[in-house]
Length: 291
Ligand code: ZN
Image (cartoon, rainbow, N blue to C red):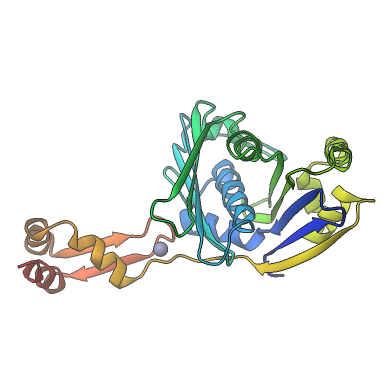
């Protein structure tokens, strides 16, 4: 079963929602970064949150979510584009915190003192940047707080990562619900009441509910229509030419030193952990090309 997200509008035009299944994405991130269970849940939630935000983007736009806290994970980053291509990184992949099934100490791993930054590349000259203080450091609530306070769009966010006995991702997903400008407050209040009664997202995921099924549970009597369905995949935009350009920024002297003293260079991509190796000759040629 592939990962995907759906975008929908309620028929009365009061709410929009995005829901995603991100099981393969979260597992791929775990595998590539070697995260321990609590870190897997934290970075899986952030990547799922990014995928949901991607559902709000237009064609060439990109978005990054960055969480910086005073917990052991230190810094988490997830990026997406409008096509559901997501990548993520975590500064320290090992939280060292105990994982109790069903209740992961994500807030302790992230650290309650910290910030959530949202960076949007909307194709304008400068990217848009917004930041809020972490509220609970559980990530879902922090993202909802960002939308509600910083973008003045009342929002609700739920993110769920369910782990298997071996610490692998068994199921992952989430949803984002937003009130549309000028909407009738009654249907919004009804959904808010429903969200309080709704079983935790991880229990819905355990029942193998699809994104459509989960939003069906949330909206119940409120009719909606699905506007779009987008595949969600782990994808990193790194490439050998790109890494080469980064190396070139080290300058002639540093490249010469790397070539002569280190016998070349090896660069690990922060997001996908792919290792790019450059031989002594290649590094020296790059130094020479800098004149
Ligand atoms: Zn990469």
